[in-house]
Image (cartoon, rainbow, N blue to C red; front, side, top):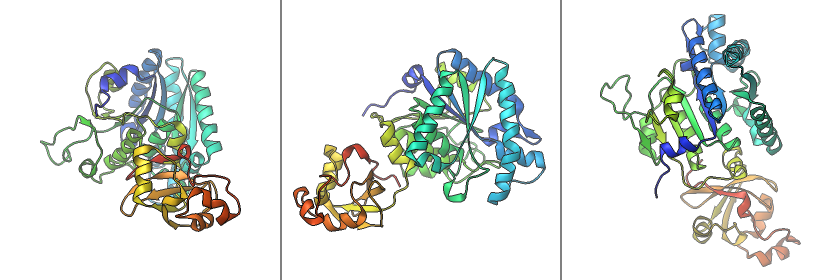
Length: 378
């Protein structure tokens, strides 16, 4: 299957998400104001060229720790306190930098539970769309100050992927302190080669990423690969590039083949299916037989009760559940029946549901409009 070329993606991209990591925004004495100004200038140039740009910016915790004079905190209360100190300074520098080009900014702080709620998901989407229509630059960060462990995005690479899908962006550009994905760690292997394009993110690519978070960030290359995996599966490309390179954003959009380009799947997921796939945590599991798996994978059918062989978990109507075979993860969907009801109708034909339950509100256990195929996605 032919992949969408980098040039075609960037030429046609009207809505862009730019993520900037902590390592690119901080230095020994605090925030790297020069870098913030350079990125702000480039973003304004892209906007001037007719594009919409949403900025996902790390740096609050790093800014706070530098300002207070402590090491990177490893406990959530200390991290939250550092973020509270640093977020004000971070957004102030962005505000001053964008004001040089007559642009206003807006601060948006999110937690992962905010996007798991469909109502809040749509509210966040509407707010950012309104800001873009006002020509205000949205600057998004994780709300470290109030997030608890189970609600955290974990790193802004993941958050940038979620924002990309939330806003139906055309491309995600992830700026970090390295040129892109390498065949080996370039810090220890001088002849490591840059991987210029990735068409499939499989075990080999994930192994290349390793486990090497930066000093001030929580991500590292592995979290960037996982972010790329999400957006490319949803049909959106991603580029990892070096924030230290002069005019990196402008060079990318003028066609210079810098960084690592992650090609998307050709079919783009609708916004609702992206929300189901990547924002909702499965509350249970349905195991299906080979016939049902083929109907889902090959023919795009709904999931019927006759194809269900086992149920795990205790969930209600409308809950997100994982769909699996004996060996593989197939996808995720929202159920029309509770776990207890599905246990009573599994293996039955649709016309037998009423007899088993006393009523048959739906023919399908999961309708295809509420079902997304992910195969091996967790």
